[in-house]
Image (cartoon, rainbow, N blue to C red; front, side, top):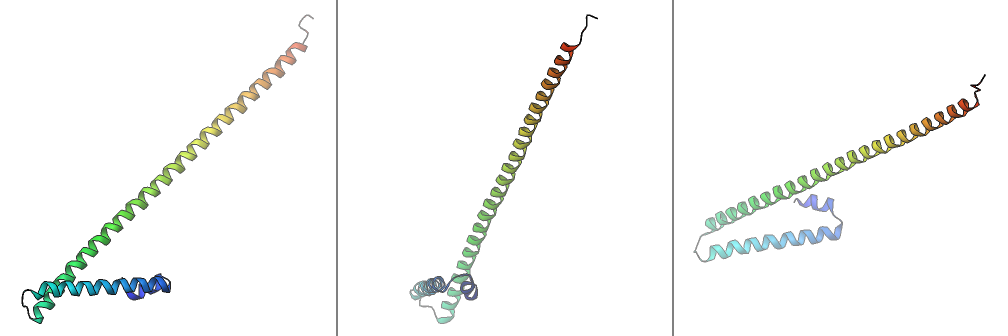
Length: 129
């Protein structure tokens, strides 16, 4: 992570902690390279070559870790989106079914009311005349 990005994305206290940790990691990396090189009686060019190799290996490992984290986040984000879409579709379907039941109930009540009115009308008609 670039220093500028660290400073822009964090508050001052968090940026200080992040930069201090980064400095400690780099110091530890150089110490590791020196330890690897010290037993072999290497000259400075070989030490630098080892340092470059170690740095490249570490950079490759960091890139792989970044790709893995991105893949995990993308998968999480995609599954979350699909779950929300599924729940939304289920909610729409449930509302439609509720509306259909309500419409059927209203229709049934209207049918009963019409039948009742017709029975009242039919009872008033004089069929004997």
